[in-house]
Image 1 (cartoon, rainbow, N blue to C red):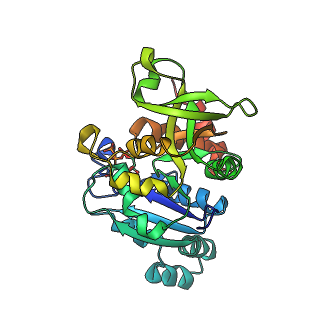
Image 2 (cartoon, rainbow, N blue to C red; image 1 turned 60 degrees about the horizontal axis):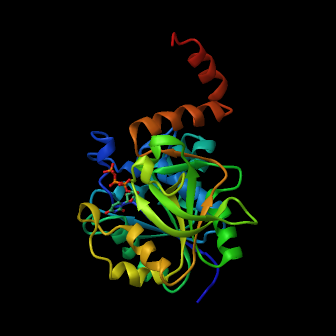
Length: 291
Ligand code: UTP
């Protein structure tokens, strides 16, 4: 078994109901954040973290993702003919980003089920999971930070962020104690799904980045559908906790929930402001709004 984290799974089989009507036909993962589909941010993060093989779990109506990461002969030929070199490079670069495989989740039976669909492609080695909705702006890519913790600690790692107050009830929340040497690391003892503020075991909300050991597959296979009739990844990780150490890690950076309308608006404003080509103009525009 390779001990190195070489593969990353992108569960993208969900229905994206929070973003209807935009997601009726267009996969949520293909919605543009400024000028790039949200899944491309995650794919670029994974590649910048040393991942060699991307596995995208797709579903019905998700074909646009495969086309996006493929070569587009017609587009490339037209751009070449028109001498649009920069755009041609942009288009070609996408198709040469990484080795990408696709596996189909026949029914959206939950995040845990989506991850399980990637079992054969992952095999017997540790792997990363990136939820494409979660777009993370960080100096060191979030999944790279987590792979470093995995290599140091030798156990699965869940990304968390600190949430103050009642907003914690929208998340899965980590239970556990802080590592004495590194306050960003937690020794996980459990997880509680969407607790009331008074029941929350910590302020550490679990977000969409994981590094997992392959033992989780067998446990997911044995997991019966939980909340909402879905096979939950959380249940698989809770089962894993009985056999192996699992760690929480408060990543450095800022996470946006781009699968949610408000989160997408926040990400759009912040990412656009950071762009050299758009930022100054956009800043002036925002300043001129009578807010
Ligand atoms: P979400 O619950 O955020 O996504 O799942 P969703 O179900 O697509 O969206 P809403 O809530 O209806 O708006 C988190 C991630 O897990 C994937 C989703 O594609 C998303 O990336 N997922 C979820 C699957 O791949 N399969 C599933 O059965 C469920």
